[in-house]
Image 1 (cartoon, each protein chain N blue to C red):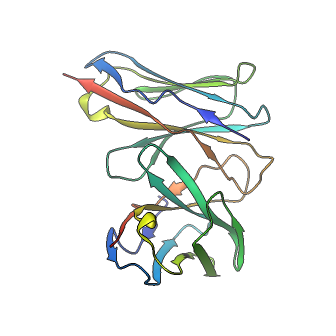
Image 2: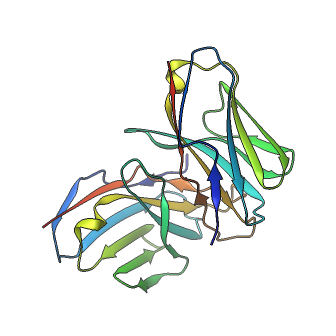
Length: 113
Length: 113
């Protein structure tokens, strides 16, 4: 059973701090990874994609991938109350085809003023 | 920008009714997906389609069927609605080439009374 594991949280950080969200995956053949942000009552919104080992930065967001450790993380710098949401990690195992992503259950982030 | 449109944001139906949820995407994506999302259970895949008239069962297909007569449209059908099908339903689409994210519609919050 292919799985993506995330700590459910809540992860509570003060405004302006760095929030670190982590994710592990079981299928070593996974090639691409995605982070989605989901506000309460809304649908998931894609915020980052990462395909290669190392870091990928986009504004205040940095995604990190370590395929040897089967580990993906998302760093949010200068966290704002508007970043408070649930963050979903997803992996594409490729072997299943059709871009059928495996989603984690999500980590709830709370940024307090 | 990818646009995935779900026909209703909120829907209330009665037990035993046949319910249709519609999803349309405007980016010529080959793959389309239907999920339901319940508190504590994360995203669960109901059905997906990789081409017109082609469909595959996901993890929880019981009580549901789907239809894809045109590439841009993917319909989810609840044959005889039951109260345990009260949920948030999310449609997503993606390209069929590798390393592609899924893009979600706004969701339909369905209540079965």
